Image 1 (cartoon, rainbow, N blue to C red):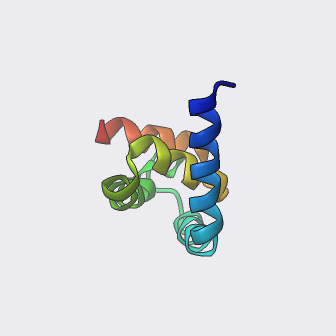
Image 2: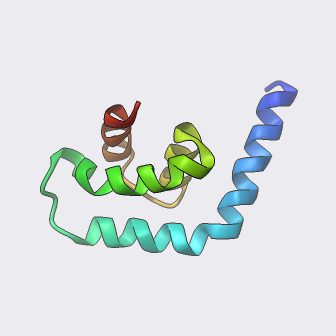
Length: 82
């Protein structure tokens, strides 16, 4: 891992540690509802949209995944936001 990747990983971990309770709550709420779209991507679109404006889409994907979100659903949702 190069220096830039190390710095990015530290940045992501720092953000995650700061907002992990909020992220886990959002993911839990999204996952509690019945799936109405494949991999529940429909519930992740608004979460990614909200986080993307401040953190960038790739960072938002990583943070939601770290919070226990459905990775396939998050990636499916992200394809609509690129």
